[in-house]
Image (cartoon, rainbow, N blue to C red; front, side, top):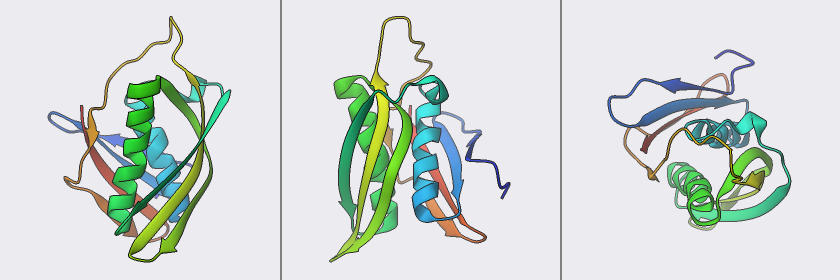
Length: 143
């Protein structure tokens, strides 16, 4: 794992695929959110003007990751919210699984902003969460 790398986009025949990295699961999940966003827009140019607090839960960390990333897809589809930063992300053990709380910082899609792709859904296909010298998550999305 390269210390400065947040994520890398991987080749996939039909859909989008990426790996995201972090010292902790929280950091890896946050970087996965940026990787997902990078498939649709340049997240680094998004101003953190709006903050949206989200909460989700899952029976395991894989389901938690899919539901968390699904929130970003939903916010874009329903509210034209562009993610630029993930703040205060916490993963918490809960009865029957895990909970996730985070603040998503970004802005609303404005005329002239380039959108270079669309993610329809986050999938379980080839989904992995590995802990070795930090945490690596691998995700495939339906585009």
